[in-house]
Image (cartoon, rainbow, N blue to C red):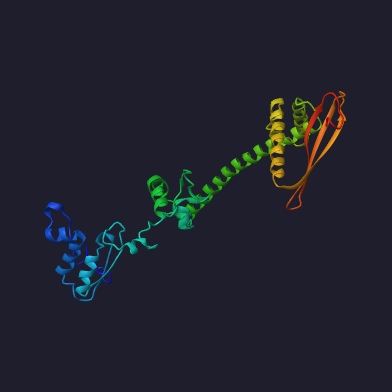
Length: 321
């Protein structure tokens, strides 16, 4: 297609009807289909030798075409295909030639949610996605075409008669209902995290006081009794706290692994460290060797922790230690 870039007038078309119906087969075999098409359109329209500037895509890229048009006082600007044999090697190696354009992600296109979509299509913006207030479906691409298509195909017949203040009131009601739904899920997540955190704290206290794991259930009974009298509206929070003997055991095991992992990470950053040993007998008259670790890192943070506790059988002389 030949088109004037100023007036947008299209003076000529060339239809490709297949290899068997090609005209000027000699010229096509010699210079190629792209060369022949351009020459045919320009010559039939009497556009040669008039100083025109031609712009084409890389299908028509040809040095022979450029040279031929230049001799006829016609200029051409083309994009380049690197696989063309006639393109000079230096041109192919140029950093700005032949590189494929990196496809942009949706997030890179900087699209923004338009406020008018709320009133026109009953949509709102939640976590980088457009959410339909009617059916709660999401449209990931922030384009009016996608949002309008969703509204037209699913909800237009039901809500097309709502206009003016009635439409605005309906939108406000839907948005308020969505906020209530989100608040319910958010509160449930907070309650769940609170219950787990409380379970860890109680387990830590039992471990420090060296109390039986079964005491966790007794503690929960006490908390429930207090809640029923002092703050009955919070009784559901107490009921969600798991303090069974098996849960307490898992919590203490997780705390132990966390302490060990944290200590190992700190030790790898020590610049200097020292060990302190202390031996004493427990209530069963068994000698226990306590090994303490003290170290300092490059930021002068001092760490001092109990590294291990080893029972000593037999002699407990300095040599044995």
